[in-house]
Length: 259
Ligand SMILES: [Zn+2]
Ligand SMILES: [Zn+2]
Image 1 (tube, protein in one colour):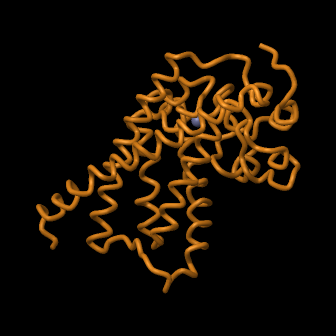
Image 2 (image 1 turned 120 degrees about the horizontal axis):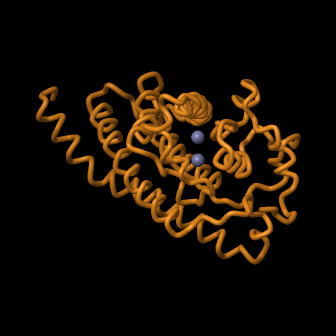
């Protein structure tokens, strides 16, 4: 079935479920993270707040609206992925006959996505691109969990283009794809939640330091122009773009904030 109307029918029939699932995934993850911050605020998270400034109700409303808009853009792209998979242009496989590569694909996809994110993110900070692509995300100077997918439409397209591009080169197991989507939103809401939720072992110089932390991405929102990475600190280390104060800021968690 290569007829254009068949392709369109597949696209249109896949879209509603993908839209609902993507919107729900983003809303549930952000709401869960916001609830964790609220519930454990007095139990210790208040002392781990990263900025003296508080996000306003207006900030949060803008972030939620942009998250909903990004969910729509992502599902429009995901419906295209379904068409490509049905046509056999992409391989999204199921079953455990090929389970061996599952772990490999999952680890590869995270490293590849981190690379995609780092370089597109740096490019979007270029003065010629910033206003169109990335300014909307940086309206959140003091981000909250709701800012995870607070993107302009052009930035949402850049972010959403990663999975289709990856699938051009690599077959993916359905579970790897699902886990990737879960890890992606999970790490994103953790990075934006405004309080450091990673234990000390993730801090610079410690054994899990190769992962980014909330402090890492929060500093990016607060100051811009450093800490472009998403999951890992490798690219920032290699390219000399880690915030010079990152270590001190991470180690100062729990101490009183100055305005
Ligand atoms: Zn940025
Ligand atoms: Zn951000």
